[in-house]
Structure formats: C-alpha cells, structure tokens
Image: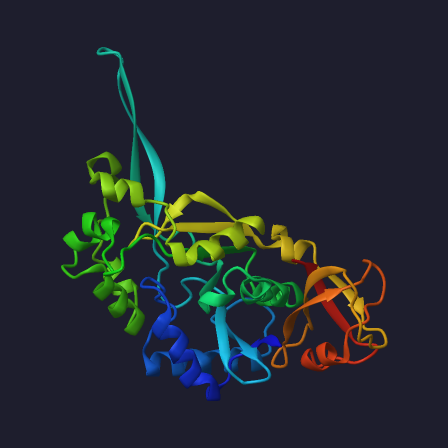
Length: 339
C-alpha cells in the first residue's frame, strides 16, 4: 500500500534518489544532500509548530510503500511565497502603441518582472516514479497536499500558486532561457537551475531585466515555449487544472513554464472534500468509487487511495489495513474526496 506522510530525517537517502531523477527545472527538489537535509529539517519543525497564520513554514511529504519502505514520490507546500526573499515571476501584459494621426493602433505582448505572487502559498517539489504517472497514486501525491490544507486552513494563505516546469530538451537546453536569461547570466539553463537549487533563485532573478521584454522581439522557439509544459510535468498540470487552478497571467522567469493560480477556498479538493466518521471495519469494498482519504492530523498526517462503497453524509467503513495506515479507529474522522 502507498501512503502519503510527512518526510522524516531517515528518508534523506531515498529523497535524494527521487531528486536525482526529477526533471531539470524542479529547483525545489535539488539533488544536493545538504539542501535536502535542511528541507526535511524545516518540514519537521513546521509540522511540530503551533501555527495560527501562514508564515515561513514548509511541509514536505513523501509517498511510501508500506510493504517495502521504498519511497515512490514526494511533494511539498510552502506556506508563504517570498517570506524570506522575493518570489519573482514574469507577468503577461499588453502594451498599446497608437497614433491617431497615422491611424495606427498596435497591441504588443510584453513580459514584466514582478513579485505579485509574494504572500501566496506554493505547491512545490512534486515527483512521482514514472510507472505511477497514469495511476491514482499520482493524484494522491499531488492532491493529498490539498487535503492537508483543507484540514489546517489557518496554516496557509488565501491563494495558492504552482510553478510548472517549462520546456527543455534532453540535454537540458531551454529555448526561453536562451532567448532571455542567458543574456544576463551567461550559463546554460541546466546550470542556472543547478545553481538555483543549490543556493537560491533570487540572486539570479535580480540580474534579469527590470524593464518590460517585448515578446515579438524574442525568437520563434522562445515564443512557442512560453506557457508550455514539460512532458514529465504534464500530469501535475492536468491534475491541478482539474482542481480549478488557472494559468495565462504569469510564467516562470527561467524556462517560461506556466504559473498556476487559485483561490484556496475554491480548490476542488478543499471546497468539496467531506469529513466522515469511521465505522466498524469492512474487509470487502465492492465496486464503489475510488477516493483519496486522509486523517486531519499534523505530524501523524496520512493519506491513501481506496475504493469504497460510501455515501456522503454517512459513516465510512474502512478495511482494517486502511484504517491502520491512516492511524484511525472507530469513532475517529477522515476526510474524503473522489478521484
């Protein structure tokens, strides 16, 4: 059984294996032992902290096979973007250039460097092993975070953003980076992302142009890459757009990938999840609906995928193995949302 739970220090070697296989551009999951160790340490402190509003906390989850102990995925939530340093994006804008005398009225697409999204919560660090990409476990790895947010709304902002990895080739070459960032920081896209993962994106972002970039002046390849999703990030994009996240307003400053945005209260897994009391165990589950199920705890947070014969508003009978995986017993409550 695959169970989502908070990461712990002993997971470090397994998390580094996942990080090493993640695509270029996932700077929130660097293949760097010390950065990953610190990421897990901060997450453990965040889960243990008493919190009444979103601050500098970050929550890092792993997807564990309970039979083998192997980690098959990971994901995270940053409570506040830009809490300790600016959170930069390119904002899509339209400039009007007009001359009444010449009867000319032109609309020009420009990109403006901004930190409009500072203060939002951020979903980050998504990775799931490739053989799980088209299964409900990819949804568990992504949406299980949202069920955690639903159970602890005081810990998160009113809006949530997600930076989706943009287009690059197998050699780690990004047409958008080559057309924009490389002119201001003379390294390859892969090297820029490596530096960002090992240190910080901010010092690179601060070398980017402060004036608007006129999109028609960029190469055709760079323009085509804007807002496009890396094939290995497509599952994340699809899951989150079904959750109600929207794009078009912002793109990533390095690879031009889309930045998704949603009001927290409107996200499907938060707005539509339901809480049910746990009834006596039932070992047979029949041919019901597939659900994501979580408890609403902190350090003992758990989430799983399970097929259930359950009607909203009624108690839920869980197989004993599922109840044990969720650390719940009869009379406790769980949170459910259909896959």
